[in-house]
Length: 156
Image 1 (cartoon, one colour):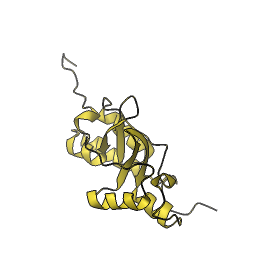
Image 2 (spheres, helix red, strand yellow):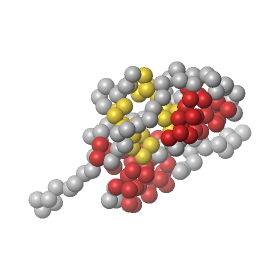
Image 3 (cartoon, rainbow, N blue to C red):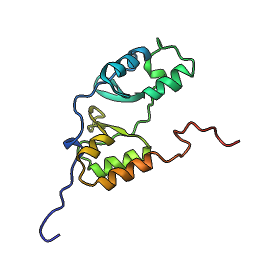
């Protein structure tokens, strides 16, 4: 590289550090109200400071409302527990790769002890990552229909 090192931007440089979250015993209604109040579509679910899950507006619509689960039930009933995360030291490229692989637009950022320290979204990368093609490619991969997240009926 002719003596010049390539600059690699890390997640911690663009992540949102002040993250709104909810506890697993808080109600689905409280999660929905927090999403409305803070104009977000996803909330990390934390116990103490440890990430234990994620709940999205889609979870509320599909798993709760359409699934007949009362809004007074705890959010743990509808949250996703197998959550992909990234580290503050990961490169933006690694975070985008994880988003593409998991087909999500946001990743919680956790330290070595699974403590939530931030969140990074595709929009954060789009605004700050100098490689616009990489962000566009990630979005295209996120939008691929795999059956995992799509609402089309399964083939009979």
